[in-house]
Length: 308
Image (tube, rainbow, N blue to C red; front, side, top):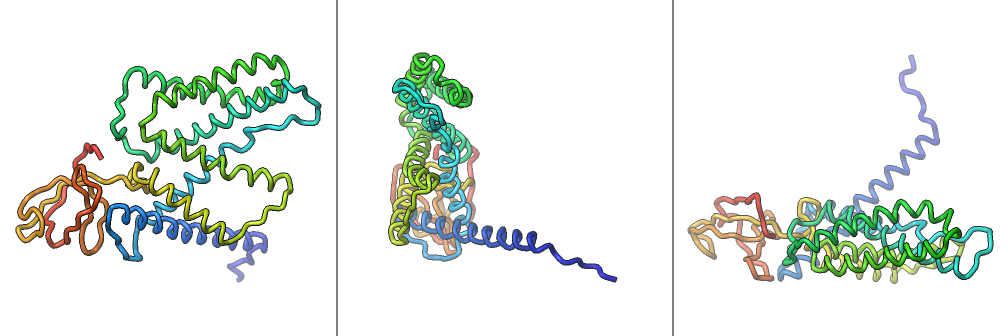
C-alpha cells in the first residue's frame, strides 16, 4: 500500500525557494540587527562582544521593514501621461499631483511605522491644542490625497487649474503641519521614510524602464553601512525596545551591599543592555553607560509608566 505520494516538482521547487528566502531573511536580519546593536552600544561607551544577541533578529527585521515600507508605498505616485499628448499645463498638473501623492505616501508610511514602534515620549515637545489640530489636519490631508490619487490619474486633464489649487493647498497644509509638529519623535520616522524612498526610487525607475543598472559590491556594502549608521543614530534610539528599538527601558535596581556602586540601595536607571554577566544602564541625564555585575543586583523592578 502506497502511503506517500510524490511531491509535484513545481511545489517542491516553490518550497525550496521559500525555505532559502526565509533562511536568508533570518540570517540577514540577525547580521543587520547585530550591527545596529553594536553601533548603538558604542555610542553609550561600551561594547558587548557576545555573538549571541536575541534582540538582533527583531532589530534587523524592524530595520528591513522600515526600509521596505516607504519603497513599497511610494510606487506609482508619479504616474505617467499615457499615450495621449498633453499640454505644458497638464504636465505641470500631473507632476504637482505626483509630488503631493509622493509626500502623502511617505507620510502614511511614517504614521504606520511610527504608531507601531515609537515610544510615547515626545522628547520635550508638548502637545498643545494647535499641535493637536495640526496633527489631525496632517492625517486628514494624507487620507484625502490618498483617495484623490485614484481620481487624479484619470481626470487630471479635466480642470487642471482646480487640480493645481488642490495640490497647493495640500502642500501648504503639509508644510504647516510638519513645522508645527517639529520636535516630535515621529517626525524622525517621516524624514527617514522620505529619505529612503527618494534615494531608492530613481534606481527602481531605471530598472522598470529597462535601463541596465550596474551594482558594485563595495559600493553596496558602503551604502548599507551608511544607511545602518544613520538609522542607528537618528531612529533606533527613539523606538520601543519591545518592538526591536533601542529606547532605554526604565527600571529600578536593588543593589546588594557588595555592589561596586550605590551599595545596599535602590536606584532608578534606564536599562540599555542585559547580558549573562551583568547590566548596562544610564542614569538620568547621562549619556555614557554604567555596568554592574549580575551578582550585585538582588532584584529589578520595571515601573508601568516611564519617561524614557
